[in-house]
Image (tube, rainbow, N blue to C red; front, side, top):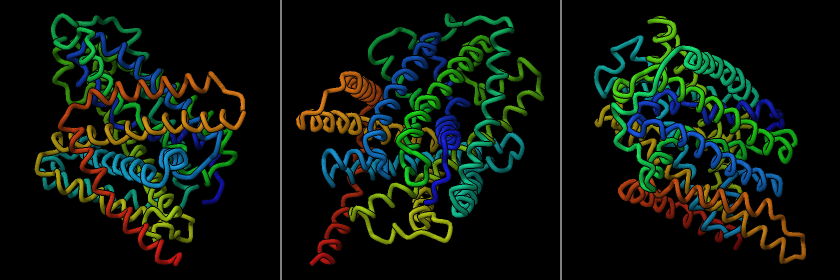
Length: 434
């Protein structure tokens, strides 16, 4: 890739990936947790900052293409690296499929026909995947510029809703509905797992490091500033939505941010936010498709995946990897569309969150292992770095516990399904070497 991404484009990539469909839907899902959900946004935000700092440490040590895959491979070897790379790739693919469904849902506000039947929703979602995939094949510069512009566009209206909620009188009607408002271990873990869908993705800025200017400087900076920016937006918006909408109404809302805007500005405000939601989710879909081709490309370069995934087009984009990823994301949509839009969306976001938390855990473990190696080589131990990695590891495990047994089982099966590709690539590489 050409080195065209400086700090602001890296920051735009973080914002573009992280602020997607989560903040526009999760406040309604969190209504049963009552005021405790505000604490959840802060806990998840602080935890994500430590995860971001941990990835920043790894990026400073060595700006390897492939992010979590590359770090895990460096610490634990090819097989462990492949399993995490494959799992992270699955996470991005499911996020792409879920994002296309979310866009279709918001398009239904303006064009009801697109959500009248599951088949209509599937056709529109598949069309969106391939439209954005085609755009990403035009190169890094156009894609990263689009991410920066759309990131700025979608943040401003969220601040408007947040500001309106702070200045318009409202109260938290937690006594109406807060069945999970007690801060038990299981409730908090489940709440953090839900909230993490809105936070995951910041680490993806470590993937296309070969397209960045001074990656060892700009990646950690973009990770920290980007995650802090997201946390501030999320806490303010969530507070405002809870202040503007009674809990019993919020719990059944299909568009909580738009409903909050309607309280402030009237019906036109709701439609405006629906437009902003579309921009936000399209930006998020674009960001995910932008980085989805990097993972198989990185594994292919290390001979852990079929070699043709390294093929680039005239714009320096891994064309085979991106197109193949588009095919798999399309299959995920096709396999789940019979459940209806909302049912398919819920399944996909839970799987995506699970498949993302696993690379968080192994990357934190990789940082600890690499620190131990450096210490063994008589280098000075950095206690601040050790603390960051340990906190990131504990937080990620805690969030993972909230996934539940069924989702954990499905995620394990999906990750294990990648093993035939690994052994195929290894066998072929061995024959070539001989």
